Length: 447
Image (cartoon, rainbow, N blue to C red; front, side, top):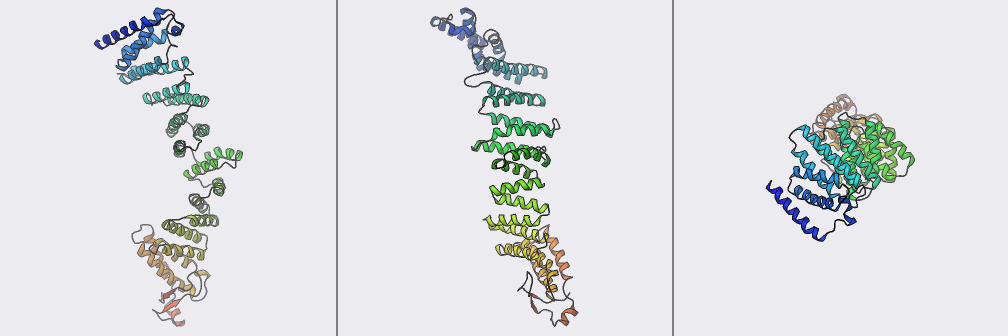
């Protein structure tokens, strides 16, 4: 109470001093009331409101605000700015849910009145005010999902109409909440897709901040569950058909479909088109994976070679070569598989997976060899796989497979009788004369 008296005394002193120098009958003061006396009183009330807000005396401030909102609503936008501060504070201090809801309703009304009386504010305007309104509603009543969506939709509509400079921020908050609502089963995927398409242009631009917002926007969409391959194709196919040379649109489409692990023919078609205008190792790898899963090993190998050709890191290049070797093995190209694995081994002689693939390639070539080479190749495959097993001893995936493969290769060795008739002594050296292991020497040993 003492604080209020002090504030009142100070304000009265201010008005008394101001009154000696101000003529409230001047038309400039018309928004403050119909008579000079009322204008003076309302200006006093405005100062009391300012002081009460500063002191966080929200009960007193609420009374001052109501007086000004009724008697001089067009006099000053600061009335509604301070009114929002007052009722925001009262929401936080509410002792019951009912009281909180009443205070929140009042707060929302204040924002609406501000838009009504100051729709074209020089510094703020409708889009800014509705942005603030939506943020506060989300803060104080996050459980009302329909209400949150409605508030943000109004803010975005105003922002789009008025060129609001912070539209990307409010749009990102809205879209994140929309994706959360879809995950919770509150809305249908069509709504997420429609809003994604509507809001995507908001995030166009080369500035770093815009690009970062775009990443967050796309990541939210990709993880929402609404961005499945079928929905993405429905969304982007007509847009790409209308603008087939739009590199940014192709990049966006490929990125989202890749995150959703799409492997449809349409995705591969769009990814190839994008690679043609903006080639990169990352896109080549993505295409290789897609074509490998689709069973098109020729294209998978083509794009792996593209990626290998531009990969500067020896470790990554070795991994790509191993993968290429596996693709060539799946395609039945033993010599090409052996060549890729041998190159990976030369880059890193400790690469156990390179030896693993090379051994498999040797064994896979047996059917194409003639004479003793068709059996001797299993000696080379065994030796190579033994090196793989040693290097991969601690690898839970490949270690066991390497040991199993060695047992299988032994069954391909020639028998003791076959070695005798070919005049091959156990422990002697034998050099292969054909196939992918041509020129490789090994040790004679019977099955």
